[in-house]
Image (cartoon, rainbow, N blue to C red):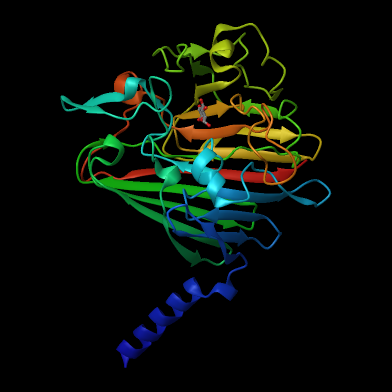
Length: 376
Ligand code: BGC
């Protein structure tokens, strides 16, 4: 008899966890298109009770659209992207994508682990960028839907095989996107390996909080919780120095318009053609902490980012040049989007004073970033 009660209890717990219509956050799945080599791509639309919508495709785990309300309750898309799969395959400057195995640059595509040398593709002039020729932004992820009481998740899984793109070890990767009713999207990254390897996963959405992609992002007010940043050389590889931001264009400790200092005659700004640097976050701990925010006064939208990562690459869309067609009207102009890429430091595998990016068998890579929206 006891057993029957126990089974009944298990059944009830299981049902509550999984029934779609008990969750106030829903997921809709629709066909998005077919890749050039014939894979069917689907878009999963997470929608919360208030009306926020985040759409993700199984190609690259890309966030294709993210609708957030302005201060008058108008919902608008606030991330750059394309309206078709083939543009994502052939010309995507990482709009919305999951990045791996190593987000950001590795000098000359070379690193070593336990005295063994590895060579990766040099797909960014002489350096390696964002995982190589076919990084995690270009692979097909397996997606599962999970419903909770007041949130819903997409669980994306991918197995990157030993020596894929030159990286050692079979890497099991799981990325969980969870949308809740507080207008927060939580992105959890998990990975394990069977050989020592390096990992640095991030999310590469380009935000334009105005919802009007014909406007640049220079009026957004940005705050970054960092007393120092990592200066780079002319190929955007950190020099190894951690430089204080005080009295430099890199000081975002108090909210500041992106455009205020971006045209200053400063060597670091010149190398990035704007901001394209990693900031060293204050008080880095294993807990989520405030990392950065961006506020657009024209719409009232405020984005706050929390993470347990040591750094954030703040990139101001300096390589957008008007050649890419928007998913709406027009083309994406210079600095029409910015990225908040929470991550470990660029080139960490070659810079021993930076936090380690290695993952050994038996260890678990676990990081988390939360994007929270509100209006002012
Ligand atoms: C990098 C930029 C690069 C961009 C690609 C950013 O993470 O820091 O230098 O051009 O990604 O879209």
